[in-house]
Length: 241
Image (cartoon, rainbow, N blue to C red; front, side, top):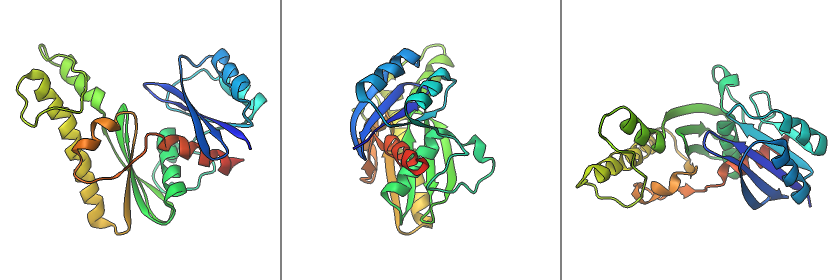
């Protein structure tokens, strides 16, 4: 048995998933990206491997620590991947999107797959059955939309999200909830329909910290997995070691 630490540094949170072989055993939210925080994880879990996907300017000293103590891999466009990226400027592809593409191939190797990541931004990531990550779409995420309405108007409040609201809002808050959450849900439905009209043997995966707000409002039942990015990171770590 070996332990792998899979770090996901996003715009909102710094997270670390702990795998024992291929099984996800623990998920930690880090308070910071200090060497001390990483050292504590190493002491606690004694990993043999580690991988980092980061879309922020993180503390690069932690990479030195992980390299010294584990078989470390920093995910980037030059990484060995179970997918190819035949699109313009592959160096611009976010590490989070590469991990989601790897997860799609890891879980569904013989199908066309659309992976929808619901985080700070919403990413639509299409991987065909030939294991080619062809790209997709990016749109503003839920919190970004709520904040934009609040910050770019004089009187609209900053609304806290909730999954339960009426179609026809009866006050400012419920109007905004309906507009943002139901609007995103219909956006997701529309993208799924467009892809399904073009591809047979088609599969959809939903992931990300905000997905629970949208699942009740989607037209079709689709596979939702909040840990999909970590499974992709684990697959890439194995692929590179």
